[in-house]
Image 1: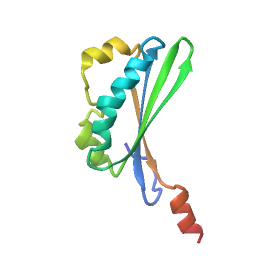
Image 2: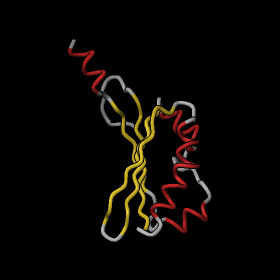
Image 3: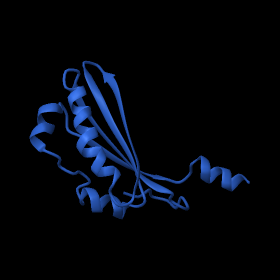
Image 4: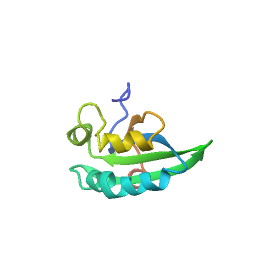
Length: 119
């Protein structure tokens, strides 16, 4: 998904994926993410980085995965046109208490690009 106006050079595409899990399941789920999902995502063509964030959200734990990609094409090559890759759906159903939510952003500036612009 692209923004509705010309923002200039797009540095990378950001994918933000969110879900909720219970406090009892968060450690198992994070181990699963690290051993399967993060590894495959990180070695995928066009992936720059991957971060996983957590926070307590009421009685649940929110898990947020932020990945940076060269292009929308690289994202679709890895995740498919749905934007969601199914990893062991039965395990996911057991650990997750909400549907996942995915958002995309175009990064149009960062500290390196800004330093080059200002010099």
